[in-house]
Amino acid sequence: MNRTITQEQSQLHAYVDDQLSEEELRQVEAAIQSNPEALQQVSDYQRLNEQLKALYDPILDEPIPPHLLKPRSTISLWRRIRSLAAAVVFVTLGLVTGLYLGVNLETEPLISGTEADHVIDEAAMAYSVYVPEVRHPVEVRGEQRDHLVTWLSKRMGRQINVPRLAEFDMRLVGGRLLSSEDGPGALLMYENISGSRIIIYACHAEERATAFHYAQKSEISVFYWIDSSVSYAVAAEMDREKLLPLAESVYSQMTF
Amino acid sequence: MENIPHLRRYARVLTRDNQQTEDLVQDCLDRAWSRMSQWQADTNLRAWLFTIMHNLHVNTLRRNSRQVEWEYLDGKDLVDTRQTDQEGAMDLRDLEKALNRLSADQREVLILVCVEGLSYAQVSEVLNVPTGTIMSRLHRAREEMRRWLHGDEIPKLRRVK
Picture 1 (cartoon, rainbow over the protein chains, first blue to last red):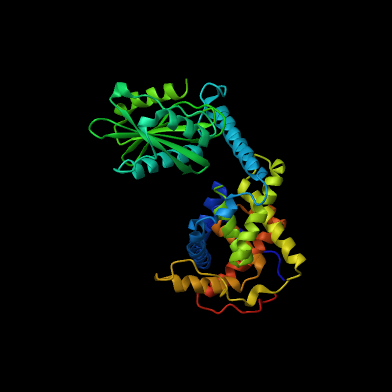
Picture 2: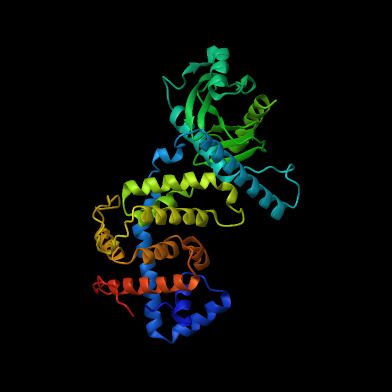
């Protein structure tokens, strides 16, 4: 069987696969312009690439079977995943900080993309699902504040404060327990006299602290941060400027 | 975590069977966690995972001594989760059949290069064969598929040059 192919053929493949240096790229481009056969070859390969993607890309969008996300036998798998995630985050932090900021780690802790995404997404989702709810927006009503604190803290495995936002004319509607990407999540809901609502969302995160961040998810403004292995988010359908003082107050009450 | 869909896709190409796909992904993840310390942070994580998966698959084949020539399967055992109601679905079925006539080695190179976009050097590491061999497999695979694109039936027995 013919095991070797010519340099020219190799370069045509590398051209299609975008694996040439700039100089080689120019050379190959010039060479194929005057060679109809090579042009045809390149265009066929490109067409084939597109078809292969069309065939195989849908697999990426299939839901991941849940058992793949869970340990097979022991809980140590999750620990490994966590330590892996921590390692990845740490390496990323190190690189980003080292390369771009050139300052030490403690001055500007960053939040990792995926972790940020999931707290933003979950907070925005919780907002869209429960805020429109009229009759059963919460599981435990705001009148039972002490019970709410105990219950959520117990289920989350750590102290969850329930801030007071009376200075913003927001009263506590109550709270509920949700399922987050990483275990239980806690939802607290507040509303003002005209029925405008905000939520506070809390879920587990890596052990570290981050600064205060802002994101916008369609109409929903989200402020989020991590403190002592909990991700917090304050979400509302409100301008950033309007939500900011509320979020700052929550931040200070949650993380005193 | 974002690598899991890619692992499933690669496993699907390797095993061409839904149940075996999930088993292979699971085995691969298990092994990856237990060998996490061996992964060097400056190398491509996905390529490393592919390497583990490739080796597991080869081992399984060897263990079962199922060195069956896959070439003649037409992929009917695959549950088609793709858009069956759309135009072009037929073409994709045909494409899959044509791919199934390639050797497993060639199919692997095709997916790693054309679909996953790995560099030739990375593919060479994943499959543990020299880059020259990768290039020749890629070339032969693409040429076979070209003939198919132009409407020629791919000869069931690949030609020996």
